[in-house]
Amino acid sequence: MRAVVALCLVLCAVTPAMAQENSDLDRIPQAVESEPAAPAPNIDAHGKYFLENDFVLSSARGMLAVASPSPPPSDWENRLSFDAFDQWSLGDGLTLTYSDRFNFTEANSISFPSEALRNNLREVYLTWEPLTRTYLEFGRINLKNGIALGFNPTDFFKTRTAVAQASADPSALREDRFGTLMLRAQTIWDGGSLTFAYAPKVHTPRAITGALPNAMDPSFDQTNTADRFLLALNFEIEELSPQLLVYHESGRTKFGFNISHPVGQSIIAYAEWAGGAAPNLIAQAVAFGKATGTLLPATPVLPPTLTARAFQNDLAVGASWTSVEKVTLNLEYHYHEAGFAQTDWHNWFDIGTADPAAAPELWYVRGYASDQQQPMTRHQVFLRADWQDAFVPNLELSTISFVNLYDGSCLAQVSAGYYLSDLWTIGGYVGSSFGGRRSEWGSLPSDTSAIFQLIRYF
Image 1: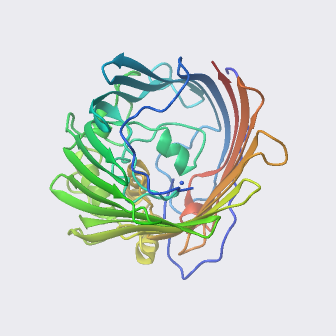
Image 2 (image 1 turned 45 degrees about the vertical axis):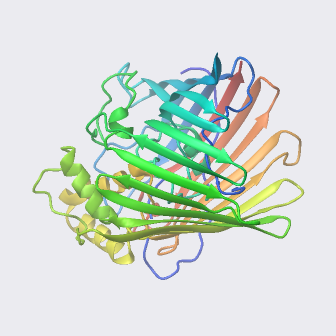
């Protein structure tokens, strides 16, 4: 095993169940994020480069209500990564941006080199400023929208972009992920901006499971499998910061809206909504499984559900509070109309218990939700606390928690990071899932994990 250690733990505080239903797997907003295309951020002349080592210990949960069809995850894993971010000015208003991570992973369930070596090309794109405050960009771009922290209904380009990393914090997942090959144009004026993005289809979609073709594969068969368009308008109205979005993909159009507003000196309230016609999560998952060959054409839809399109709403509403002691608290409510209702959860467990042969398809639906970065359940609460310079300078403590409002089950993670110097950082994460055997988080195969992390900057 290579270099270096980290310890991590996941903690979940159980909150009382609110009726009896369930969501599945696995930001302090300032104003609405408009994601300005350029100008490039100020960075050191040589960019940002570092080596990161994450050593993971994990434990599996026994006596699952619905048996997991796949082998249990490794009880240990070590991932050594080289991370690079840089920007170069090419003259005449032209800039090149590059972001990449190369991973070498060791575990008792990973074969070398097909699974051990993996390059994550996150971003590589050109930015051109033909007119003042007007930008054109082309390449692989991590386009982010939304102001919530735990779930972003308007983050339309998040699907199938996740890469391996230590933190389960959605804010970290959002920053460190695959970008999408696209053309983006933006113009900025005093009090607003207008952005247009077009992402072309360049590949048929790859199945969720299965080995990657090679270590250097850019995974465009995840990020660019349909023609997609996005139009976003940002503007300022006194202390409000609204954003309007229109998104189109595969014959379906979604609308989005973000807004934030300060309440007093230390609180920011915010809301994020998206809506459009679509099947529910179960129907989407089964259709995708059949289209990619994972599920047979005759596979029934399980749990049973309507497969027709209907208008589906997604909502994240919350607030952040910041103290003078550098403590920030976020509390959010998430509504994902396409997700599991209480009846769906009951059916999922009843079918899986009575018919073990149906377990692979039942777990496939949950895997699909994770792959799409959608909540599994219809109603959930997200909590986040962050404390910078906790107790001593350069120590940051953080905790996150997802709570299913149907059954009270919870997924939580506690993390700590300490900046030893400008060159070295150590950190640790502990994560765990809590709940009964027939609850969303209590039914997961993985129970608790701990990660020790060491980072060396260059």
